[in-house]
Amino acid sequence: MKLWVDDIRPAPPGWTGVETISQAINALDRFCHADYINPGITHVSLDHDISIPVKVGGQWYNRPSPDTFQVVARYMVRMLEGTNPSLNPDIVVTTHSSNPLGRKAIVELLDDVGVECKETPLEQTNRINN
Image (tube, rainbow, N blue to C red; front, side, top):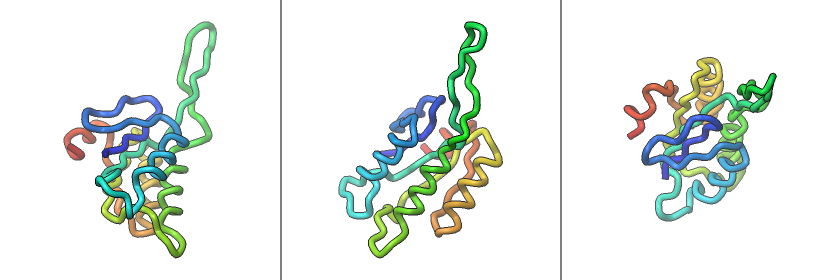
């Protein structure tokens, strides 16, 4: 399974989309363990920013939330820590955020623990990850 983590943009064809931090962590817990058979989650593509819908003058706008999907990347790091690492070592991780600083933060966070994460701007995601 290819897991697409993004609160606004729909998952590309062939990807399973989740929109919240909780949904992403639940999917990782359920399908991403190193001992999971079938092959579970083979790819994860992370957005960075999370938006909050706000109604102003009868019109809905997306405003930035202080929360980000970096929490999901940190959870993946935790899956690697300890005496019984549970993250599938063959997982392919990219970040497709439109926020270049957010993409860089996720890449650095995962690279620091030996998980290669590629910055894949949204417009390149379908081309590179299919």
